[in-house]
Amino acid sequence: MFIIWGFRQSKKELGIVGFFHCNRCNNDSEWRLLKIVSWFTVFFIPLIPYRTKYYAYCPICHDASAISKEEAQRIMAEQKSKAAEGSFQNQKN
Image 1 (tube, one colour):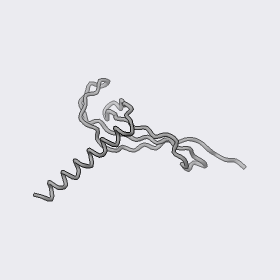
Image 2 (cartoon, one colour):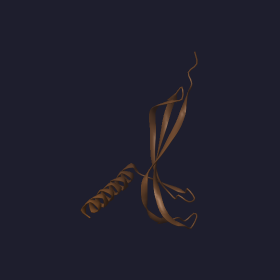
Image 3 (cartoon, rainbow, N blue to C red):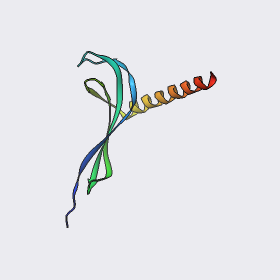
Image 4 (cartoon, rainbow, N blue to C red):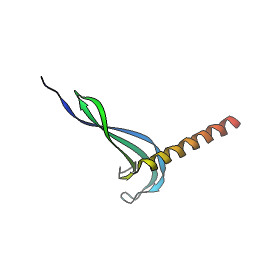
């Protein structure tokens, strides 16, 4: 009996970090927040996540900087509060 096992990564873009200057490509753009989860797989089915990393990256040249989980959560909370504030403003008008 054969057991096929391996590793796989899933990537998910979580939102916008902010407007920054990229030192690599010299462009100013809205950097994105990226979550990469590494999985242990059996028969190509992801079973166990064993590593999660967060990155802020330039959407033009894809240069990335690793950030902590706490910093990523803070950025996502700011995005939610801005979105809620924007929807409240739209309902008010």
